[in-house]
Length: 165
Image 1 (cartoon, one colour):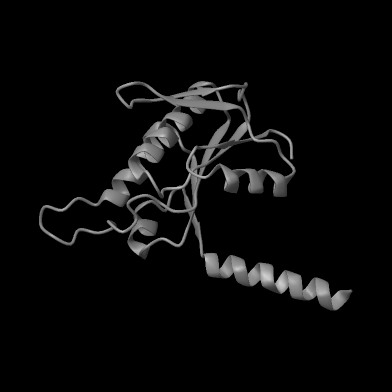
Image 2 (cartoon, rainbow, N blue to C red):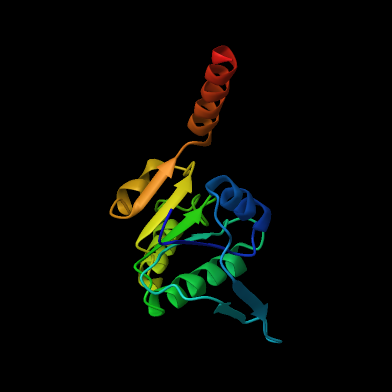
């Protein structure tokens, strides 16, 4: 697969390595660190000029830190002249806050989608969103799937392989 660079955020490096292995790619070099005031620093360690960049970062665990790291990684790749940046977010942060349920309540999931777009994400791939509202609000660049659909497809593929042998 030419012109693809795959990076891992720090939220789930094992998952990123498995994806890279499955695709036959090496993970791109990236260094993340925290300053003494807990500010996040990201340094992309290779050229991404003209490349399609995929960044895998989950929205679990330290959600705010992981989200900020992802935003900085997206922006770093975009200003380094990557052709396209796709954020692969298995667990979309703030997905449960996808609608206005009180008069002064924010729609945080939409805010996160907007921040990703402003940071430079051209596309977002995510799984099992909480509700369809966020899908409609961010339809222009959001792909979503169901983990159940993926597991069923993998199971069917395994069954077909075992029957043909």
